[in-house]
Amino acid sequence: MRKLLGAALLLFQAGMIVYARFVPSRYFCWAPFDMQTEYALEVTVNGRELSAGEIRRRYRRPRKGVDNRSAQHVIDIIEGYERNYGSGEHAQVVMRYRINGKPEQVWNWGFGE
Image (cartoon, rainbow, N blue to C red):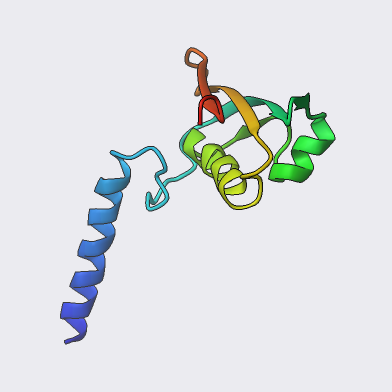
């Protein structure tokens, strides 16, 4: 029985590692720190641009920073805040980011939603 449980656990872990290689969030990956995501946030709430301190208080992330996980990690933090706490504030967020020094990408929240 113990061998069966051990094998099932290892099989589950292997499956989650394979799954994590094909999704942007990568929460189940054994090596989640294999990316460097440089990002910069521009946030406007009710038509007013937020300062660096206001952005830090809102998302508990700096306006500009580096995250050693997937860019989706930062996106999930922003989306989670906006869906749960900022839904009535008409926030617009632009996140410019680059992963491992590759070309810049842009992610937007609140434009046309």
